[in-house]
Image 1 (tube, one colour):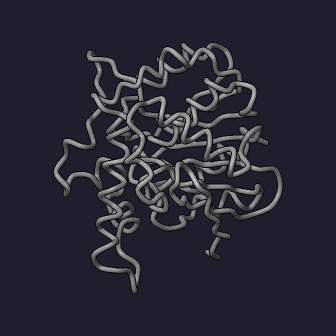
Image 2 (tube, rainbow, N blue to C red):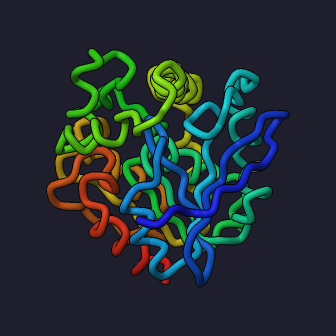
Image 3 (cartoon, rainbow, N blue to C red):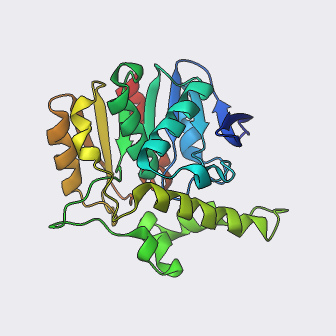
Length: 260
C-alpha cells in the first residue's frame, strides 16, 4: 500500500489529521470504533476509483485531544460538520462505519442537501432495550478484538504499534480513541439518532457484517424503516462489526457500486 497524502485542519483549536488518496469524485469515510491508527487495505480499494478523504474524529488517532472540549452531542455534530467543511466533504458522497457511521448519518440528517449518497456500516446511536447492542466499553481488553472483527487477528494487527512508534504515546492514543467514542455515545449508546433518521434525503446503503456481535442485525431493519424507500441493506459474509476490516474488498466494492 502506498501512503496517502496527510493534511491537518483546525477544529476547535486542535490539529486534526485528514488523509487523502486517489482520483475521481470525492468519497469521504469516517472510521469506526477505535479509529484508524494506520492506513488500511479497505481505503486503498476505495481509492482505486475515487478520491478518498478520511478525516479523523476529535480524540481518535490523528485527532489529538479535540474530544475534551465536546461536552454534548450537539458539540460533536457541530465539530464533525466543521471537519467536513474543512476537509472538502460538503456535497460529496459519505460513508462511515460504527461510530463513524453514526456521525455520517447525523451529517446527512441535519444537513440533508449536503450529502449526495450515503453508506453506513452498522452505525451506533440507536438503542432498543428488547434487543440491546453490546457495550464495547464494558468489555475486558482481551475480548475487544473478537467483538470488533470476526477475525480477532485483524483488530490486533490494526492496533499493533508500528516499528519505531513511541512505546508510551501509542497505547495512550488508542485509549484516548475509546474515551472519545464513549463521550459520543454515553449513556448506553443512545444518541436519539432514530428521531433524525427520517430527515435523511440521500439514498442510503446499510452494510452489516454477517457476524456482527455489537449491533444486532435487527437494527438494520429499524433504520431501514425510518429511511423509508430510500435505502438498501446488504450483508457482508464472514465479517464482524467492522466489516471494512474483515472483508475490505467486499465492503469497498459495495460502497463503490452504491455511490457510482
